[in-house]
Length: 378
Ligand code: COS
Image (cartoon, rainbow, N blue to C red; front, side):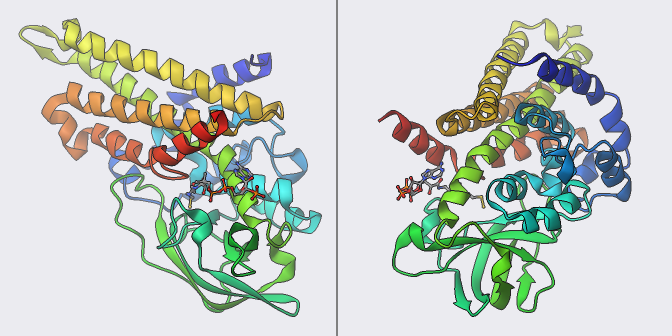
């Protein structure tokens, strides 16, 4: 199913997991990976030089023209060490949206800076009253000559504080449901555009999440992406790809959980022998490895379908649900294998469990993914 190039890319990246990334990341010991969301210049430079921030984008926009599958492999590799992975650059949602629906002017203006890590992106769809029921938003963008006037509140915005550019979905025509929603790219610094405080989250504390407030923010019509009324479909189609990205984050967390479990169970001795000698531990490790392989294949299949321009929406949802559940189980078992040592911050494995939880929630809960899957079958 996969090209030779995909497999070579994976092999190369695998060898980097234990070499290059930890070296780049070394100024962030585990406890700060949990609390520090401003990327150092060193990490930004290193990833930007390798063009690993947006590898699947065209070369002319700062990418490497790699397949989507390869970008998913990279995302897994980066999430192994730090759950938000290359999401810290906020390119996963904004890039595909601009590439598919943006004008040449918008692509030229924004993509290169994002791919170089000079700008950070964010995606804002949810509002306090509209989470899963995303089309029930009340933020408005009312046309005023060549501008739109934006008013409302967005929440759960990953990179909200750290970002320079935000995709904002807003109602341009009231009373017609999702057909009245449009999409805009909004730059930070505009008058009336404020960020709330960073949310005090359970996990993925290596990225910020906040509310965004728009109070009569004037945005040029040149910053509308796609046609008026096309916003909801843009959001859902971008989320389809994004969900494969979340599956890849979950794979990174599950792989880290498996590797920590193997290492610790071979080192830790009880009753005069390593705990890895006990079948109860062996079965946990075997289940983790088996489920991880299945989740990876499902995720790669969804990515492969996207690369080959086939309908991948339901597979993306399957990959997200399954990989996130695998990450949750694997990280919980990893803590269990570490016993009391797994339950304290210093060991670092409880972070995996906290980070895994969000993959079952953001970019559409597991329940919403099952709705998407069921609808595709029925
Ligand atoms: N891509 C493009 N268009 C899509 C689509 C997709 N994957 N899925 C549905 N659409 C279109 C439909 O064809 C429909 O268009 P028409 O009315 O022209 O036929 C339109 O979008 C509305 O579809 P639908 O009626 O199915 O929408 P619902 O309001 O029932 O919502 C769910 C569908 C629940 C699946 C959607 O709201 C969803 O994914 N919610 C979760 C949102 C989410 O992930 N939030 C987290 C964001 S991260 S901040």
